[in-house]
Length: 169
Length: 173
Image 1 (tube, each protein chain N blue to C red):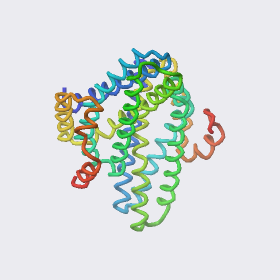
Image 2: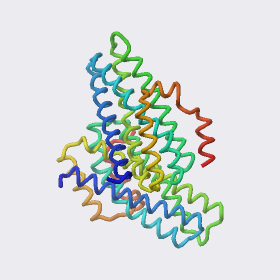
Image 3: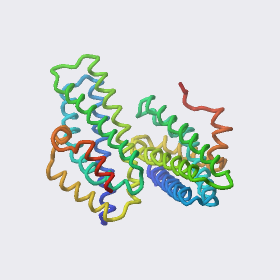
Image 4: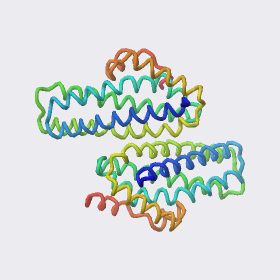
């Protein structure tokens, strides 16, 4: 299997898993079901940590070959917003119980993450235009991220804040 | 091949075709190649018309099963943006020559549309969660849109539902 085909398959499957964790999280907030809120939030954070990491370490820098810098910066800003939403979700999940207002906020934060998932998934049609060698490097970065296995907020608070691959404005 | 699989394939292939037209168009503007600009804009306007139409008439309303009304309205806003940008591209392509500023404006405009194409293509992961019936309706709407074969600007100027109708239609879902 070529690096481009392999990337397309794993990228799509990761988005599917994150999508399903988010849809389950929305439902758990709607049901005021705190144990499941924690379960699905943990699942989403565990899956998205390595995913965001290899995107920023290798995939987004590679996209500069075909997208303009402003478009790639927008992808990074989307990550910023997703991380902020995840922080708000963690705060809500830490509560002993969820008031109606909290449940609605939680469902809203989780739902706000869905467009990030589908917009990110669409990048696979841009990845098709990159060279196999570039995509192999992205797959290698993915392997390293999975090995390090930092959840989203741990990665954002420790590694991400200290090593920006792309210059931020 | 199931209707779902067929829909996934045509949806992606249409985005690939639009993506490639846009990259070619960016290049044609950068080279100030007016015949090339004219050719690629014309193809873009023709190709995007039926695609936008079936998305708005069948796919976007179906997405309300998974996305919020606000998120689906945002997709319609993206279409508004794209129609405005393609109108500008058609205007530039209709000129007898391209100044350096026109060429840069056209290239930026076409490049800006690429983000809308991959954003739209990613909807395939949301579409996977829709029932077979909704996919069947989207395929039928696609066949009707291809049959009517209105280019993007003609569809936008004559048949596209006004936003108020679209919102009311969503509320009735």
